[in-house]
Image (tube, rainbow, N blue to C red; front, side, top):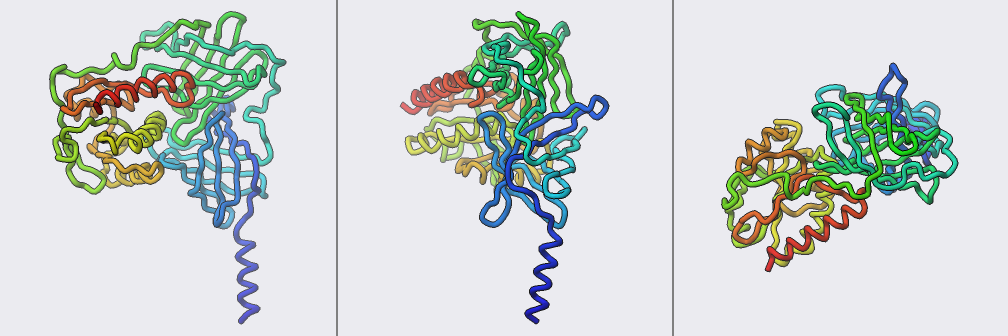
Length: 406
């Protein structure tokens, strides 16, 4: 009997493939015809009882702990976001498979390859140090067309080298942590966070950024250009969304994750200032804001501040939406209410919250005083990848919170 058990153990070891721990380079094939690749780096580590994957974008580290190895497969689910990787282990230094973004109806699947031991995000030789891109840029996406939009590009050449990190600030949020390299005067930047897969390519012609391309996964492409402009600013995020009736006291009533109706008029919120976060678990900027608000709530809840999140998911299935939001709640250890209207999209959000003139971005955040009059409405979110803008936002936001608590 003992020999049989030992034999079974040895066979089971052979059934499950092994994968090397260490640094890997991941590649998403976003355009097969052009063989256009979107790269990112990650590490596979040995946890206490299973593998842990850490995806890296500049200063960001995303810890993935839902990792399963079965026979010759390594599959892992991204934290919070409704997306996953399904891969085959080839040898112990190669992964081949797909990334599936379940929240997308069109083009939800992209081919993926992982290479062990490759530390370079882009397989390109960096230029000799020259500050081609360092600084602040006035950026135009889709220039010379009716729907062109403005942004601020902020790029830092690390230690004055040709390795670069940065982001784009827009009126609806930022493009989070971008990282890359300058090669042949062209800048290559990418980011992968489980929801968004971003690739930026552009050329510096000496005075301006030209011939820029922006790819979001395999479903979106647009051009962009830029020029140095330290004085350029976007529209004030406090001026983009407003009340239909400036003197109104707002009210709403939606189900929480326990399917209990919650209203702003409930006794819990009476005579208390309240932050209303309009968001979605699929939205990386919303997650950045949630990380900030959860810490803010811990500090000021004991002083009387309340917080309610209203989440517009990419599904009308309440059970599916609640499941996504429970993962979010667990990830950030949230103790405030998360409400589920059961609709999706900006238009439906505007219809569900008719006291606002529009919802143009997720997140949109309101600060109410003790009488539930709106003190400020903040559209979008400048997260930690924006550096100075994030610090400026936190200072302004916390000052308003302190005012409404008086």
